[in-house]
Length: 142
Image (tube, rainbow, N blue to C red; front, side):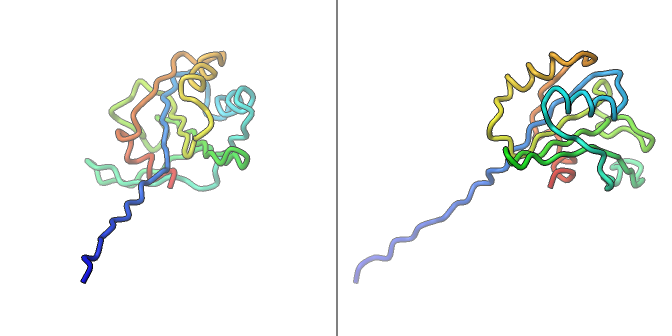
């Protein structure tokens, strides 16, 4: 009798998450407008809020955000202000004013995208962060 071959099927998660930190004095609606003009997208204020429980205080915090789904590129954009009425979204990175998150970005190169962001007037600095450092953002974008 022939020996039965065993094959393991491994499915890799192909979802990508790119996180950019932005330092700017703009209000969230103004930055969303600037990003819309420069990147030819349509970020709009979400009617939903992002809620999570603070690890230390156990207090429930809510954060507003802007989002856009590009149907042509199949890319999702999220803009969230780090400091809001509820508190600080990412307490470890208080120097960052906003986080711009791209999910499922398979068309734009990260370096070129950062260069476009840096050309926007009013943006002081743009940083690239590893997505593994932002488990909360994964919940926001899922």
